[in-house]
Image 1 (cartoon, rainbow, N blue to C red):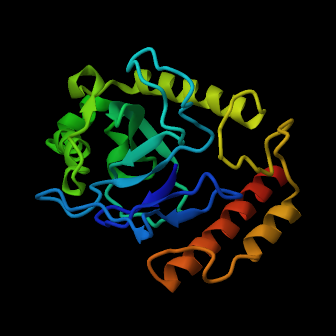
Image 2: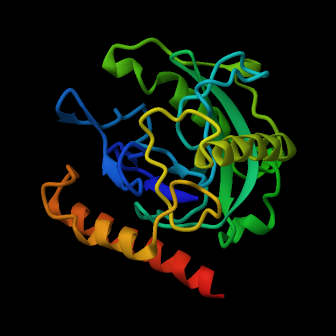
Length: 254
């Protein structure tokens, strides 16, 4: 996964899919930086929250399970390990289950996962193990997603399956499905609207660019291009993008 929001923080950081190379940015609405409210008794996001690369919830595809179309974003992940992660960090995770959120009429799957290197990962293998070893965590997750928009004057969210979590096997099938939608998007077989699909690795993609072009885009970023919460956040995002490019360059060499 790619971490967007560290646990216990409130800034709504997210992958900016409509910008070249999809940097992580502090989301803005009506000219103001967005923050999630604290949902009693919690502070901010109650997991390390992020996205699963190479997935896409197609807004033109009606999900057979939820009856709603996708939200036009990568699939979301709630990482429940003990370590507080950093925005932009790449974390290998074990998929445990999934929650089917319906957010303002759109399908918005929430994958439940744990970092592969977490001490508890050796005993947590499926959603029932979360119930056993982290009692109350899944119930808190449902409450959080149901209520987090209420302080902004919006109604409560609702869920498919009456808020029941589905197991690992079900979650893996959702991931496979959204990965196929992503492949269609990257090969221009699906309409992503304003999504920028520039990439350096996807063979056959008409959006593929050279590593030099990608690096030039990153290095051209200057303060004022992003609108993060402070200058240090800007530098962190800049360095994380460079690290991600280097990571994929190394993978390509080996």
